[in-house]
Image 1 (cartoon, each protein chain N blue to C red):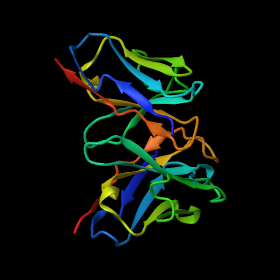
Image 2 (tube, helix red, strand yellow):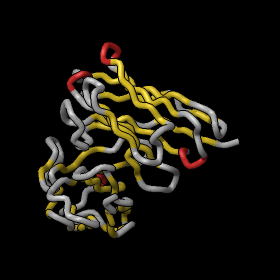
Image 3 (cartoon, chains in turn orange, brown):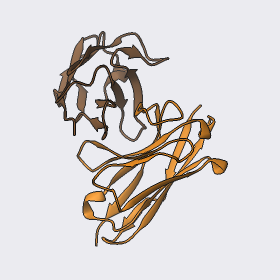
Length: 121
Length: 107
């Protein structure tokens, strides 16, 4: 069974940094592209970033480009999101999401339960 | 960005009813659309991909249709476990965009 477990969320002040992690199990992690998707309180979902199986292709939403960095460690079956210069509007539940193949198809196959990031002074 | 307009935003229905949820794309996305179910505190679950292909293990009372700009998710014979929030997402063009969600409640 696919399991995606996010961690690293919390309360952080504006302008500070946070690193999210996603531990994957139940599938061959390095066979799949991965994504981060977020949902602000009371708002809809927003795709944040994606990375191919070998980290060769990486994409970001314009709202986080230049501030967030996605990465993965296939040996540890883990996905990361380094979030710098955080803003109040980054407050959201962040989901780790698996794609359906090596490359970025945007077919969100399996989701974690999310980790909450709150940006506030 | 492609806008996904989902309607209705909420829906009240009874067990056994048939309900339809619609997603409209601001431009054509072929059939590059998925439907998901989300329950409070739980991970979203994929119901449908390629607009009309049922995810393995999902009951056949769920059906998707559409292509281009208009898509529907129909649930026939609502069961108690179907009361949840449903959303669509297009994966035709970056950035991938979502409908606002439809909360299906028990009448």
